[in-house]
Length: 213
Image (cartoon, rainbow, N blue to C red; front, side, top):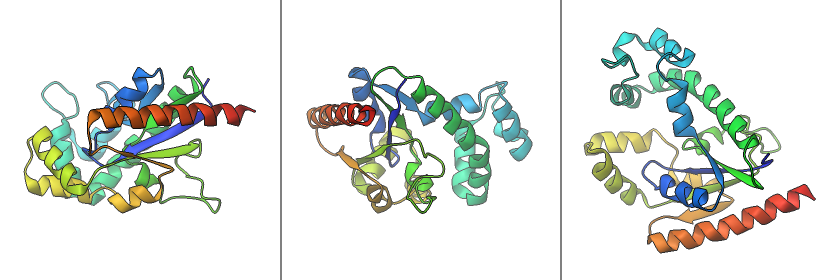
């Protein structure tokens, strides 16, 4: 059981998946909030039933699954709709992530949480996250905003307006960096990224070991 958990976050199209793949290659369990969110609204799930009850049947595609593209357009155009969706999905995601991290072998686990900076605005007087009090450390994958935009346009085939809307719906780069214990610069080469992740892996193993003593 891994009692030491690192929260990994970054803005959209910052390259979090490249980072998590490198942690996994080093034998680290990564609990991915995006995967947990998809499972939370899988066909037949109670979560999907809640989404349909809240937004109507037009959020489903022909197979009965959540139409993610249509839902994404809707929530980025309507902040209130985004909040309603988050109240359904986020508690389920948090429970799934904590269970997966606690069950992980090895000295530490990584919880990849895209919206961690947004959740970090809710802290108690001791600075502990209300939503994720079980995180011991936070690592932020960082790239300049113009790099995010270029990657979004190339990756998703969307227009500039939607790309800008997606960025504006998230915490700013400065807000993410403000919560970071560690910063991973993902604007360089893959070799540079390898070196950063290897160094952090060594650091986290040492910190996890020290926490047990």
